[in-house]
Image 1 (cartoon, rainbow, N blue to C red):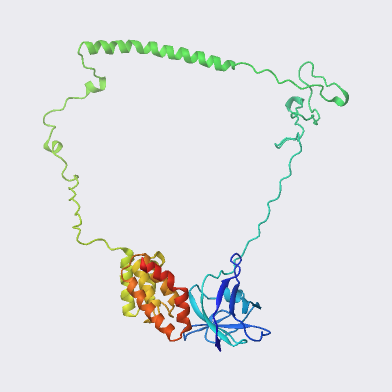
Image 2 (tube, rainbow, N blue to C red):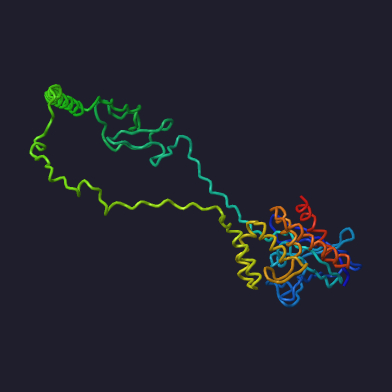
Length: 390
């Protein structure tokens, strides 16, 4: 197998499901082209139709062509919508042309289902002069046998009653009305309302006349220094000295609430523990104890929130410099470099030194001819180095 560089491009960002690969062109173009995808692990290392599996599987290219001395092929949803994730570093083998190369899978859009837009049914417009209500479009027959019409429209109803009052004769051919019917003149206020108002005025005047003598007597008593008393108050005997017992004058000690002691203020020596820091410490202890499931559950929220120490711990667990499977089943230097970048942006002091350890290891492997290390240094290193240099 000959080594080849692989350039990856998102072919359809809107609908997704297509990825374009560009590799070195072979001397002879094949009749068909397939690709096998492998990741760096011994457990289920090959991509199959339903995810990662133990045996190798070949995916057929949807199309391929030669362009500018390169071979360009298109992979469809069977690969793009599979279990490949961003920052996965995979090895691709093209058996028909005898080539193999590594690439970091990044920025490829999965298939997007676009829903069709159904236009709303158009509401028919009413003809000019028609009424928008629920009655007859040209006019409605009123009570009492008279007909009414909308402005600009003729009356199309038939009179069902007899005209009221003189001059109600229908004239003209066909018994139609010869002119607009004038509405009856509105009368003034109802008679019963006037009577009620007069009665209300009389009642108010009588009440005021009844209350005036009482007000004068009260003023006279106040000026003479007399104390107003009521008949009920005079019938109540005055309290004696024997009634005022000590039980009445003393406060109720049984029902009185005890005094609340003042709340103790914190002495300031033990600051409150940050929940993210507490979860980080529990996760680190779980890694030391070999409980990887607990470590993942404790550290996932901190990783999602971008908590610096947690992100740095994930990076150290992912890079290939001293890899031990726990938080990640396989090493992934691209993801590790991205997490080192986030840790440096979060101002974690230890992040820069940890990043340098990985960079030295990648450079050593690249000098030895490792193409994966060369791709990682070229693709993912610049952003992390820039963030940790600030």
